[in-house]
Length: 245
Image 1: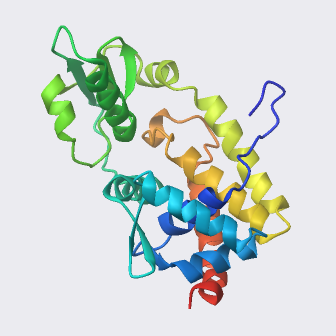
Image 2 (image 1 turned 180 degrees about the vertical axis):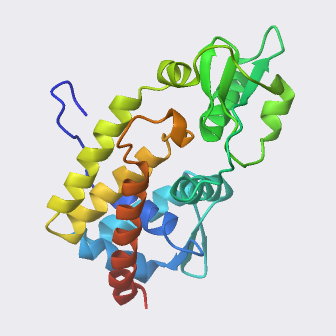
Image 3 (image 1 turned 180 degrees about the horizontal axis):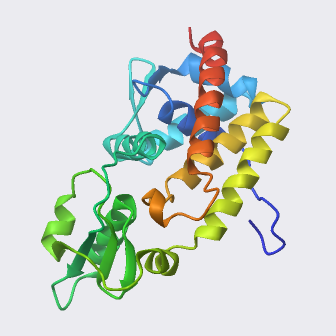
């Protein structure tokens, strides 16, 4: 949202149409003709889509084989994160927290950036420089970069857990944007509008801390936003089949 509280969305481009289509498709591979037809559904010219495909291959976003395009490993990892954001693996929370503390004194900038990206994917928040934590209610593996740079353990903080969660995440801001995205889905009047909002929904779900219910404000919209996206995807998949078969 901008400073006025208005919901701002990224405009559709040929690249975003191709990328969002493949990220939402399993397996994430489609022939060029299908991607061109999807682009046409949103008013994007065939030449524009084909130029985008060529540039995405050159950038390492896509691989091309026999007229079909598929996501590269880097973007397959993004697809996995998106899938997880829609149905995160959780377990009953026993009050403990995951804590990861950076152990090396000095790290090159690329290593610091890789760790920060990994922590965001794990939905940990930074309490202070080099100290990351969250409630231990998620089930997912830790990537090697975390073991290489951090000591990890579980503990029960003395602070009030709800107050600590509110300190680590801006929960009212997340909830406000989620409500606005639900309203935007309701207001969408075309497939292009719905597609644009749905892409923003997925990006927003990636930032959901997925906290235990005990730590969430009343009326938390996470489940509603996921349900609304699932409904959109079911409808869009039906529409997409007309353009990809």
